[in-house]
Image 1 (cartoon, helix red, strand yellow):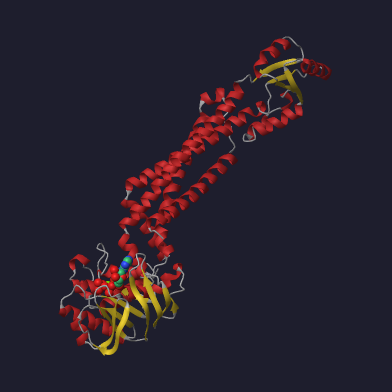
Image 2 (cartoon, protein in one colour; image 1 turned 180 degrees about the horizontal axis):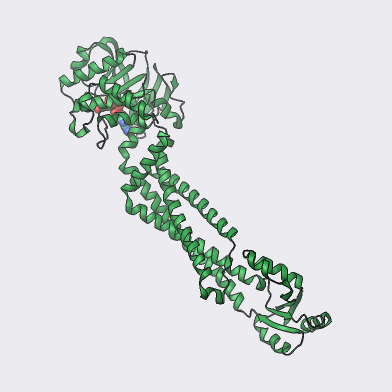
Length: 227
Length: 291
Ligand SMILES: Nc1ncnc2c1ncn2[C@@H]1O[C@H](COP(=O)(O)OP(=O)(O)OP(=O)(O)O)[C@@H](O)[C@H]1O
Ligand SMILES: [Mg+2]
């Protein structure tokens, strides 16, 4: 599902975010991406959806050759990937329903389609009661769930989450991870960058640890290990 | 269809966000288009009125068709011998009829009614110095072959060069104001893009195509441009209709302008306006969305 081969990402100033990294994520896997601040977690994810362009190496996501993908085809890649950022990035002037529907709207879906799909997603993230609330009226955890629902709107095969629980207290974090696991069980590959040791240790999954843009550890059923 | 209505809705929302800028843009396009429309129409009107005087005809001697053609011939020869005369051309009744048909091709009723027999033949004189036209009038005074003398003097030449100056200076202004409109459109788009920054970021994140993201901006620029030009052209037509019917105009000048020319001018301006809007939006989007 995700393949990186000798990938490097060097910024203009010369700072190295990813350094000659090679790894593979199979379809249906759930992977935690851990590491210190600045170790390259966000950069790793951004390379996958071509927010950043690799300086070197080959990247393949959902059978798309990301490294050779021309700029104008990036939207095609993004339609196969769900992206959840640390800040939920919701539109303040739209309610929960409309925020989720937005992803369908901009793809030109029909109103009936939008209605049905959005309701399914509201069910999935358990936000039926808050469908007509605006982001300002939602808790942090609820906002994250809206953002997850929106990321799932176009049935992505991969879900990339960058610290989705970064701003949440432990209980809410567990809720979010349970939701991601549910999505994963339904067949979506999930890669989640996180700082949250409790979660990683409690919910045993594959753990990839980064340091200075290199993989220092890659274990099935791994744990967080703080250094 | 749903895509299109989304784009249209967003275009209007954008425009509502910056009403003053939109207004200023439309005004700038309007003034610029109006200048182009009216000066080009005015030039066409002047040209229609002066066809006879162009190509260096300074004096027209209408001949009395009751006298013999030999007398006409003699007159032509003596005119040619005068030092101030450069050339003399004989213009037959038939040619006069042709010219009349060209001049009044927009007034078919007139063409149908007129008795072409009354159109006289004439001699068309080109002078070395147009201001010498008085000399010709003096020389031909009392000549039985002459029915009437009409001279452009320098007036027509001046009028023509004035029209050219007018067209050139108005075009310069139109260009300047057009440039202002261009800057205004770019800025409107920039502000629109800025206020929709987050929305655009999310659209990109969920994989909306870049055409889709751009369309509302392109629409906005094109709509503003087309509205401005349409109003200007509408005004222009109204002004021409008004002058056609005004008494003053009739007494000095024939407001003849062909509908074909007006339609051509209108369509060209609208086409140009469309291209202008597209171009401005492309530049604006490059700046606003930096891609
Ligand atoms: N746009 C950028 N321009 C320059 N350098 C950058 C940019 N983005 C990231 N970096 C650098 O790349 C390195 C990796 O950053 P990255 O954001 O991927 O780390 P991270 O593991 O996500 O950190 P955090 O846990 O704080 O989110 C850092 O040294 C960072 O300074
Ligand atoms: Mg990060």
